[in-house]
Length: 363
Image (cartoon, rainbow, N blue to C red; front, top):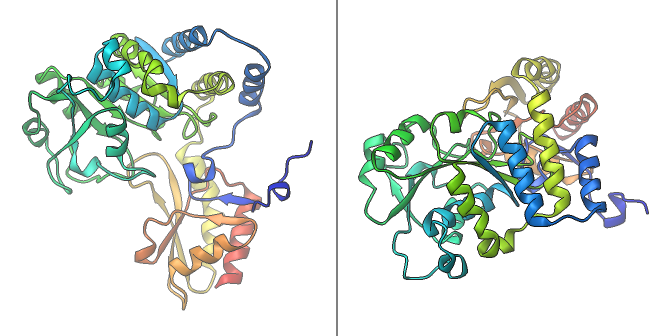
């Protein structure tokens, strides 16, 4: 059987937007594909597979416990449910029961963002009620503490380029507030590249996307305190049933983490080196001005930032880049300011040449 774009009437895509869910996030390696195939071709006791892969990953990551889930979003929902229910089986089967009143999840107002779905939707799916601390452009440790009540079940911190970056408390400061009030802290670090720093900073549960920095199949990972992970694992009998992950992706993701820890990801200096000829070529196109910029959230990710100054607007250029096959997807967050960003982590030299040629035609 032949699989192709044409078979399903699909356009080929050049992904210069980064590791984004709307484009399938990442490409997986042959190692990961082999692990997925092994999973697909064999049977397992699924509860044991979940436990043993979690134990294996906990060892690699030097944490008390780990659990593979369907996605980082599932990780948020199930973490919230776990910390509300605290292992109570009645809660597992009745996750939205009014018998449990302690459901408030406090997070900085500037962290209540839409990353493809609003953070508060995932919190609500887990049975939580979002309480925003501070202001859209500022949240201090004092602001976070002021939002805590007797109904607070946990604190939530979203580490993401989607969130407000300035005047926000750090993870370490959020840990201090959580400890002062004897509350667990969840850190959603979905796209973050460091699998150690947030647990080492004192977070109780940390959530990662399997398909972003780790470049695995669709999956999520929750690491942290054993008691909390045990509570989270119980959610497979509750809300987690609708978020279950298959054996192939469990094994593929486990292999991806092992490979990621051994090999790492492309360094910032390597990215900049690859960007130099690309940016120089873009800068020579009439109506475009290009430069290299670092990720707004401070990660070691570098991109080409292109200012559109010609007769066409940035939004019009973005639309035309997507119109043909291969469709070129870019980062559109600053399009209203006339800026298009190109993330090259999943783009090879031939694809960069195609992007330059398309922009010459468009401009």
